[in-house]
Image (cartoon, rainbow, N blue to C red; front, side, top):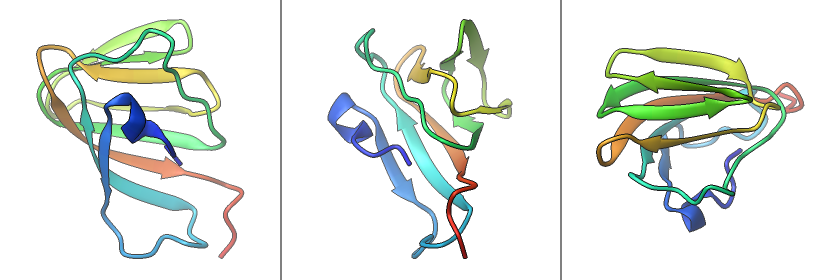
Length: 103
């Protein structure tokens, strides 16, 4: 999961009461307008981001994407990644898939 992300300005809220033992974890995620250049994430599994409001700039590996409301990106979360709100805060539905979680 994105443990520790709040200390870097990210805000997220789980959309399920208990995801223990589940492979997928959905969140309502707020991307801040600015993040430190050295803050990147890598974790097992896959990640899907569906933008709800604002503009989100996402870096995945060596590529950068600009996503608008209604845009979606899906990637291997073992790749270094990070995101920020392009013109202020942005909100997205983020779903993490962790194949190591067992039911």
